[in-house]
Amino acid sequence: MICLDTNYLIRALIPGTRDAAHVEAWIGAGENIILPTVAWYEFLCGCTKEEEHLALALLTGGLQPFGDAEARVSAHSFRSIRTPRHLRVDAMIAGTAIAADALLATNNRADFRPFVAHGLRLA
Image 1 (cartoon, helix red, strand yellow):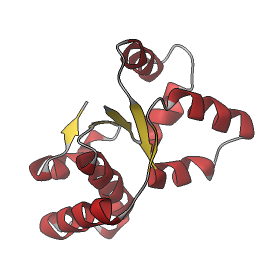
Image 2 (spheres, rainbow, N blue to C red):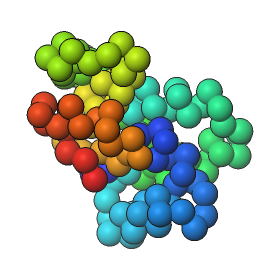
Image 3 (cartoon, helix red, strand yellow):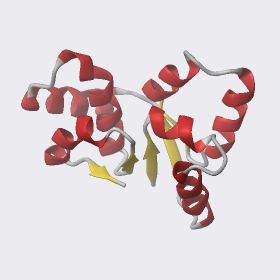
Image 4 (cartoon, rainbow, N blue to C red):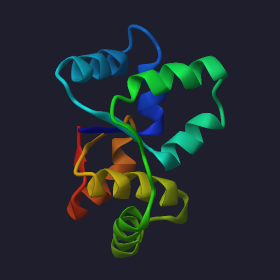
């Protein structure tokens, strides 16, 4: 299972990008592609209706809810690594990937590296 970060989803919608090629290859290999609902919120803040429909078509595993398990993993990681406040949403995305036992595909690896010690696996 592959969990996309917001920035990865945005670039995956651009034909010919490395991210688009990766997502296409993962889908071809039968991987489920998921997106945390927190990342979906970020995406919806700046997308068109057409981009929304294209994005949903890529998400073979659908939207991954942010529930109690995800909140607990995210909060524990956030507290443990004393993440700067501006990375709260990243902590939520990382927690969702960890709870789903999914690899996280992101173009912002530096912000997510601290979460690797808490079980995050980067694609």
